[in-house]
Amino acid sequence: MRLVPAPLLSAMLFVGWLLLVGSVSAGHIALAGVLALAIPLWSERLRPDPPKIGAWGAVVRLTGVVLYDIVASAFVVARQILGPEERIRPGFVWIPLSIREPYGLASLASIITMTPGTLSVDLSEDRHHLLVHALHVDDPADLIASIKQRYERPLMAIFEGNLR
Image (cartoon, rainbow, N blue to C red):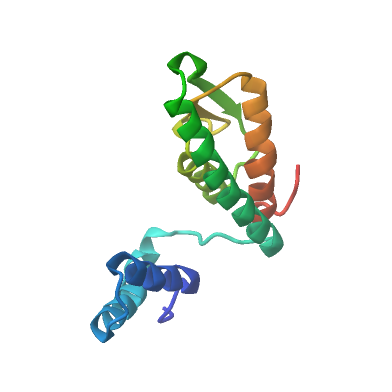
């Protein structure tokens, strides 16, 4: 067993802790270091197969797309909820999935939930459809196409090594 089984997770925990407490005192740096080492070691047995990242360039591009979408969606949602209520058309949409890799499915559901105005609600038992609730749905086909193009395709490149 390696001392740092998940270096990226350790780095994120270290930085995340310091951001959470809003302090870089020696005590918090030490505690962040202990957490950054202990949590991945403890949780390693809960991760049977670590994810295999196939396209780091796609990770960088997808991160930019997601950050942009989060900020842009926040403004759209604010405008919708502050505007006339009759302009909001909430709805549920089943997204047909091509991605099969479990880490990719979890990432897709998380990205959708992090983006203001959308929420991943359910994954079908066969893992071929994801139920998404959107605050505003004009055309379900547009929502499906957008999610598949902006998020699912890059996740397939990242986790499955292809762009089906």
